Image (tube, rainbow, N blue to C red):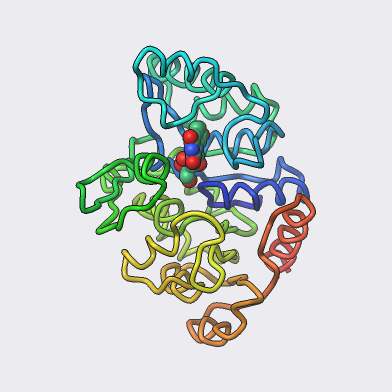
Length: 308
Ligand code: FO1
């Protein structure tokens, strides 16, 4: 089983490539849920939905989230009725959140709900939330503490960030199957997601980081940063806030202890030796993924390295 840790749009691109080059029944995705939020009374799990839609071939790969071709009639009318509509929920996407919210009311766990929805959409790969417990990423800015989505979407990640915290992580437990999947994996892929707000919450669930450190199987990461800037989103900003250098070297130091191999951008060749000196095998590649061919190529390179 190939196990991938992911969150956000960057991770979903590599997952799409992995699913195109391995038998999806041999792929298990552990998803960040720190971005989860409640809008209009509905529970939204953005990173789980992005992965589910991606693997179902439904995702809007242009935007990187939601369902391709979705309409926003409900959003428009919600706005007309005076609701906040800065978080765009498409009409088909709303069906997912309505279903998830109903199942939560019927006291189902997030992992069970995720399984039911991915099976309904014909997804063969296994998708696990990092935890069934509620964990909320909160971002502290000069204007006070806001939710991750208020920071990322409403404020377009413009505010300076003083700190990020994962409320509920300390008391949380890995979702059923997460630790077993890590222990039995042939290889673990850390996708090019935001190290602080996508991979960080996964590592903050007690037991997950230790499991990654203990396993024999290789843990192979792909850098989400080229030079000093994230390929997409605020990773460079949040790395600095957390005291790490905003570079592939900073990410390597952040993952030190469980990362065995690190694929970085060809543009970052000058820091490869320094990452290597951390005891992390380092390779340079073209890590940009704009086409499906890019995603397949990078996934093939990562898997060849992870399963050699
Ligand atoms: N991102 C945006 O930039 N604007 C949006 O309006 C937006 C809506 C949205 C709805 C459902 C969903 O699953 C994701 C959505 N996202 C939106 C992306 C989301 O903020 C990110 O995917 C993650 O939370 C960041 O990793």
